[in-house]
Image 1 (cartoon, rainbow, N blue to C red):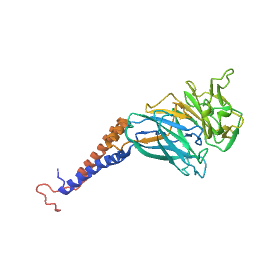
Image 2 (image 1 turned 90 degrees about the vertical axis):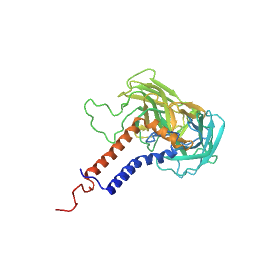
Image 3 (image 1 turned 30 degrees about the vertical axis):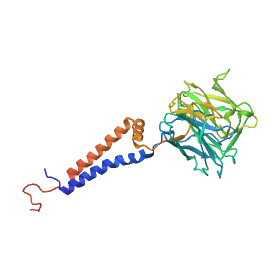
Image 4 (image 1 turned 60 degrees about the vertical axis):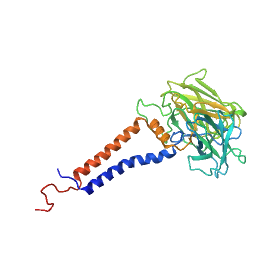
Length: 374
């Protein structure tokens, strides 16, 4: 077998080294500033509506590192131009804990659907292992605020309604939970489920788009029946006064209904006199949520006006100290076996390239060969 030249061997070694380094370098750079905790829900589906000073919105979490220094929150512009500010207060221990840091930002007009907005503050040196809550409220010159915060409800999304432009007034709104809203009537195959059946098991919450709903002004109640059933409703939810929503999603949560898949449900919403929802000619815009609890021990729930609910969280991420060793540990923990599989595939790809180079690359002359044509 002919030997490769010294120059080709050097090229081969450099190519292999750069290829291996090329896989590790992006990981090394990314690990330099990895969030301590992050809600990774994509896409963002539901938002809180305009921030209200009367009912501050808060999120709890357990920090894993020292030096907590930044919190980013997924915010959305609900008034344009969005000139108002948003104030974040970091509290120790609980929603009503001692205020540790206060930061004000003016996000301006955000992209359609929302963006990450950063709140940077003086690092909390001893933050590792401690519980924190951050509270969001509009600044003093805006009541209510121009922005809202995205919320992640635990579980799978079923029906996904499109935010429409028609006002749906109260005080009573009735309809059917629907899974699909066809653009035009179309024939349905024999045996196929109707388009307004719930698509998943464990129906556990329904969110309605609300223009202005304030339970402090009167009862706000959802009643739910299986279609065709008479008598008492299957589920009844009455919202507390802290659930006031302006231009956002009003969430009614209840004990999961295990056998909800492909079942038709009718609902009745009772609202106060001045309340109004948002929808179209078919009724209010809605989202349905399904599944069982999938809580993360580091997440402590969401609070409105100090009332904590554990089945949803704000969409946020938080940063502590910059520590690449810790960051690589988090990457290994979060990626698990996928990280090792990716590394093995990358090394295998480099080995294949090296092998192809050896087979097809430039060759030197063996003993007794002049390298000239005969």
